[in-house]
Image: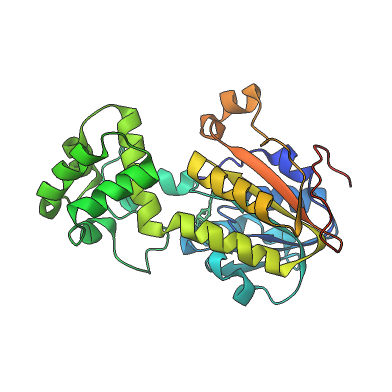
Length: 287
Ligand SMILES: C[S@@+](CC[C@H](N)C(=O)[O-])C[C@H]1O[C@@H](n2cnc3c(N)ncnc32)[C@H](O)[C@@H]1O
């Protein structure tokens, strides 16, 4: 049932004792590793998916007093956390606990309602939202969030049948094509349904606002659109020193044992001690 956390040792190598926020607690894999390794860490564990949070609560019971669970969106970090912290972790996207649940409608491999909301108590399922989109909007979603070259043709098919699409299988059969096309189309609609890119932009900004000097932001992302946002944000922010010149990727061994790690990229930055000197880049962890 648990999601296998990605790049755990690499994350741990950048953690320092102090207060951390795991903004994407999921089923608690990274936080469990952090709390096991560091005895002077306190974690605010946030997730906007209440079901994942419940699993994490049970799993992390033994760390009572060292963790506070919060159901919320990392976009609202500033409202959720009222003290300066020494680290913020983002492991964005979805966990296998969510992807493997047919009822949530994220996967074209499983047949279920075309929902795609991370938080099912909020907003409308994709199947309902599709009915209100124009053909041009669908095309833009597929192009911007899925980087799909056949966006126009696929958008036309979806638009013409939008009233009949109820399930993931309906969408899959309509789009046709190979698994890569289907992955791109499903990814695009998932990003749209949950406003994922805007959330990430907002989340990074608010993370910076609660970070102590020398505090760290660690971000693991799973596709190029997200990684571009992280890279840009780190690069353009004069309050941050980039600690990873190139993104850190999982080893061959990790990918072999957990294929979902394949596309992961991790970037880390640290808040400056003061001033806005020349941007420096270091590959190593300087604990
Ligand atoms: C890849 S999983 C994290 C897995 C976790 N690191 C672990 O080891 O189990 C991403 C998690 O982020 C959550 N999530 C996605 N967008 C979010 C947001 N805007 N605010 C809070 N949580 C979010 C998802 O519900 C999901 O549980």
